[in-house]
Length: 451
Image (cartoon, rainbow, N blue to C red):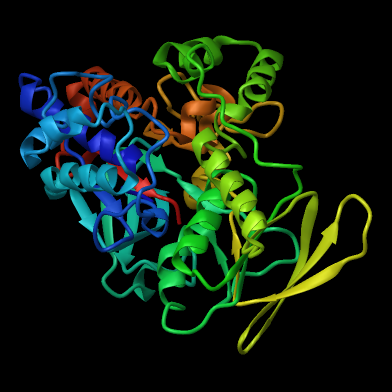
């Protein structure tokens, strides 16, 4: 996810700064494991809409006049009037993904696709505080050895940078005692995995999870496999609606990041708890109503294909050559039982990856708070000891404890990218001629993926 929406927004901000900054430009290289831009491809379900307004695109909140806005994309595609006539703030996920690809194509000269970052080290020729970092990359998305010797990496390349931006992304979360396999998928793989089963009869799917992805996966499989039974399994009593009311939505405003950052720790925890229902384990209200109507109408018809197994936990899965057996435990009375099915879809969310796994020895110089979490400045820079002078910036869910609930969402991407771009410009302006003499080959910043 090194060049997902977060670092794409940064590439957009850098490109516009370089075009209009009056000579105050930044040299940047983006490193991405995938061979081309892609964002949650496995959940680009037909008809699924975004949960955020199109105005929270990669640029509008930072600069409404930007050439990278969603409205400029619509105009370029000849669909602006058609979109306006829909009277909706929420494009389909497929269309928004196409918008992101459109933006990525305009900054592709900054991106090195198909390369994996495997190590980040102080420059070998440096003395004193590390002011230049070496970013070690190799071709391909997979790497078995997380930190191989440089000579053991075919096609290895070392980039030198004064600043790096870690786009840490999210890692699929799986229930305990459940291992993914050919018939046990995370929801992020739904589309390609389901497509592989279309040429054979399917009789039952189990979908685990009560959030938006779980509800969407259940609806999608019910629609795409008309002869199969879909069992939605979750520990809640029912799907809970997302709170998208106007006052609650203020938690996603750029100003809310300032409020959250300066709040005492106990207030931060309270705010995350109060407003978790704006984002976590909740479902769009219209989709909840649609699923309920389906359940009820099937009861009337006597053909119940969509089954809601609430207050139930998945405790194990047992794969066999022709399917998988799900072991379920009711939470309110009843004995454990099994369901034989064609596949188990785990819509069990994501967890933030730990950026320190990529930092190697540099992690020792990253300062932490009383709970062992990284200390991160308002400008998104990780606080370090005096041994590291180079800037290490962080985007994504790993900053939620300091910057709030928007950290892993699209809502403040544009503004955050502008803040990081401004911080990089300030860093460059503060260097003396003596500090920069002879270091022209290095880039100002290298946005990185997680290892």
